Length: 208
Image (tube, rainbow, N blue to C red):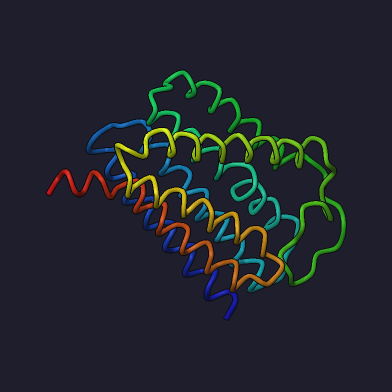
């Protein structure tokens, strides 16, 4: 059952990433590209969650889960928010960071035995560089999302409210990940729906 919930969350996140990417292709707005990448990373992390729940965790599934869940999702959301605000110069540093994150996920040593529960990073990774980079990047990404949403909330009250709710649900799911993959997958699915609504609701209303 846990694997089924996680697989459903992965499919949902992948579908939402595709929908946002379609809007980017139609409008070429850079924030939509960043948000689509963030949802795609969310889908990949959910896929690793599915694999771990179904077949047990190992180094490979943990690396994928950590790269896309811990290192990429929140920072890419933050990049999208900064692009929405007009900070086009963030693209270069963002691309450098993505390369750094991939390098960390591939190269850092992973230690300790894995079980059926979602692995805790502190049990398998040294603090520096992997956990340190994840903490800094997630903090900056989340601050960017929240700050831009608050600053521009008068222009997009419903959309920004949904984005703030999605970030909160995702953070709560991460905090409660020890409850099991099924419960974490539920948080992933709800957060993905809220984020998708926040990214697109105002554009749909204007189109109508």
